[in-house]
Length: 164
Figure 1 (spheres, helix red, strand yellow):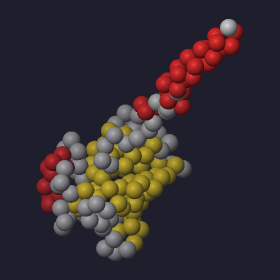
Figure 2 (cartoon, rainbow, N blue to C red):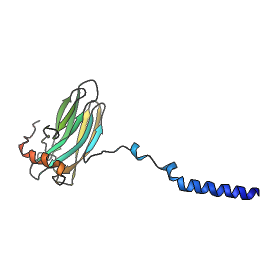
Figure 3 (cartoon, rainbow, N blue to C red):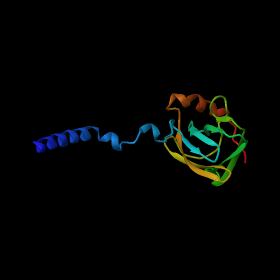
Figure 4 (cartoon, rainbow, N blue to C red):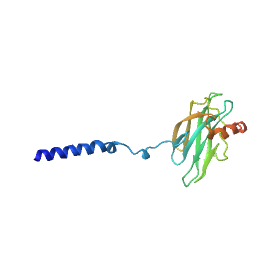
């Protein structure tokens, strides 16, 4: 009699664990960090870089994205890149005030006209630095295949190249 009870409890326990076991080992998907956009992102000391994409219309290209400073002091973000036409290292810096979001190519902000090379579907690399914190970003090269980027890409003809 005791063996029958033990076997019944063992079977019930195995069925319970067998059907609910995946919840014991499955990670919660909402706790996994990911970039919820097409572009690349980075978190530096204070400054956050969001949705950096390199947009091209085949002739003119520019870097677009957002730089956010949630801190209480002004911060400087430096973007270092290799100019593909001149094959030399260049950099451009932005001062971002406390609580400011600086948009490049979005929300009326001008995209950064730099020459990273590449065609749609490629990935180009830039380095973003704030203070002693830096990170290499693999930035996707996109064209107007996505309707969201079409107005930005159409405005690239009016973007003057940045000089450094």
